[in-house]
Image (tube, rainbow, N blue to C red):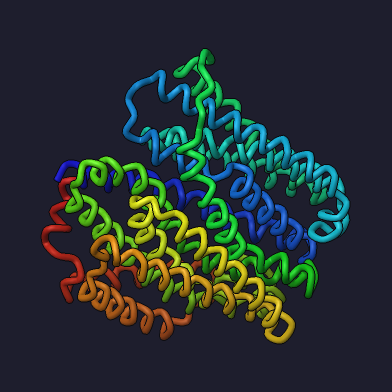
Length: 478
């Protein structure tokens, strides 16, 4: 039982960190949308979208490979050798990326940032640091130094957002606000780099990474394609409808995708925890961890999806402008439902990763990415930003279905259908209350959400959606 309690504690730490990170975005949305034009907010969204893409390509799948290959390693010399060898590969690929961005800077800026070259050069520097920082973060994740990992994630976000808020308050132009993001990445880069060098030192031999790269490279299409499904819709909208449409789409998308913050703790911790049991042949432990993880994920995300869909328009009216709310509120329900399926995928795909069947995930996401682009090109001109959200939903459902189909060949799927049905029933009861309450204004929304949470968990408890064993598990954790 103790190992499950420790696992839940770590989930709690990472979960709190991701809630804080998600809230930072919601905090900044009203500030930037009310101080800049919709088109300028669209540029801000494109900046963040591009920064999210670059590490998925440039890091060559090595951050996750580090977790898979070094999580159970205890020999400091081997850790040092592998880590620095991976860092050198990523550093080289990051330099190549930066040079490519410089060469095509005018074309990229023209397509995404309305020709603003100052923003383009700032993005190049941030992207460089984002790639290196991801490797540093993976080091702390690999060796389950979860407090450090969570702290640095929060600092990277809040330092950048805090400086950006300050610059906005000082009536600085959008270029300076984007520059504020750089401060978070730079500060955390210095702190993490110093700690890692202090522990590992700098005296190392370069290791041949044949096995690691064989595992890592097939994950690159999966990572890039996952980004394509998550974020390329903003690029397509920007090219077809313009930056203002991106500004209307992004807040509604952000509300729906906030559900993925519940997935992050499991996506971070499961790959570091499961290999030790899988490699020792203890599949019962693997099954238990997956089953608990999926249930706890759904306990929070199903009601969140229901509530977020109903409250989309009043929330956007509070957070943004009337124009954005009127166009963007329909985006949230489709994205929230898609995020729900994406979360189930993110837990069940651990079965394929443990089996080292990353080629299946690579082929899957390549196909899903192509489908997403085709659907966006077809649907956006006719359905506008709502069409982009439908395309996202379809692609997430496909990723979920294909992964479940292949995973069942190697292990028992972690679905507790009775529990899922009870969670849905409790969520519907809660949703009916929220719909009847129909809150407007921030205070009323907060009150209704608080009451809705109580109604949901009371209903879930009464219909025995959470059993006594799980309650005892939480008691032991506390």
